[in-house]
Amino acid sequence: HALVTGALETLGEARAALGAAQPDVLVLDWRPSGESPGAVLEALMLASGASLPAIIVLSTAPEPATLPSGVVAWFQKPFDSAELLRAVLRYVPWPPAGTA
Image (tube, rainbow, N blue to C red; front, side, top):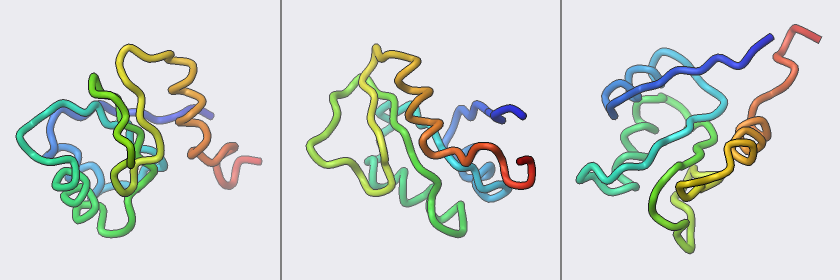
């Protein structure tokens, strides 16, 4: 079994993807877009129709003193890719249901 990944370029694509599937983890490459972090997370929550998956942020900005709601980890660029993978795997059920 493998992890399924996808890359989305815009907030609109992310909204559509969350409306179609419920991922375990969302890795968000945080680039200033004119929208506040709270507004982006709120838009994603509305699109998901339920609670958000675990969100991991990648950013050039340092980790804030308090992570935004729903964010479970923050990696400042450049970061260790092995550490990112370990963070992702903490929130992915493994092995997938029905495969044991």
